[in-house]
Length: 116
Length: 117
Image 1 (cartoon, chains in turn blue, purple):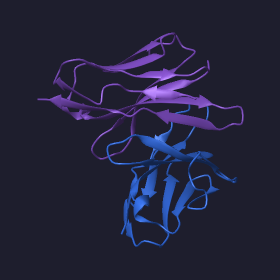
Image 2: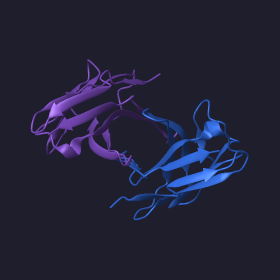
Image 3: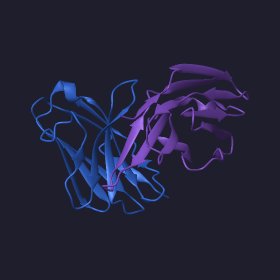
């Protein structure tokens, strides 16, 4: 149980275009989802907390207008990278909390974004 | 601000041996949670073990156990009978619930563990 999927697993886009990444909880409902960014051989950096039906909470230094997060249902959160640039190239990982009392987040497999 | 420090960037261990990964953290809070996550080459993050700060007993999950020293703010992971499949990056993580209902997870920089045959 507690499976989280991400789509796509790898995407290449041209500079200036936008790309959407989906995060789905497959066998549970998640009121809270998280979006992380991971640079090569580095740790995970929390970008934002996504709560179903409300605005996302962004971490300091993360551009809200560049990284649009929408948590429209209890099983789906999306991250849209707008006007992508090569410096946005990274590995993006989502996670979800199936149970707010356990605080155990379950991670998606990640999405590799390459901006050319 | 909370911080998590993993001072061992890389470690190696012989198969079947025991290895300990270090993690220290800094917080002024009393209610928090600690986790160890494993990230194999596939990059899928996998929860290894968790520890509630209010529990004095060290958590154990099969071959994995922690040494939680709250006063010293230390949370080390011991892997017994190491297996080749344990080769991965290991991240120590700190989580603190907030009164607003949100959560903040902070990850350490990771320790790359290689199990040698």
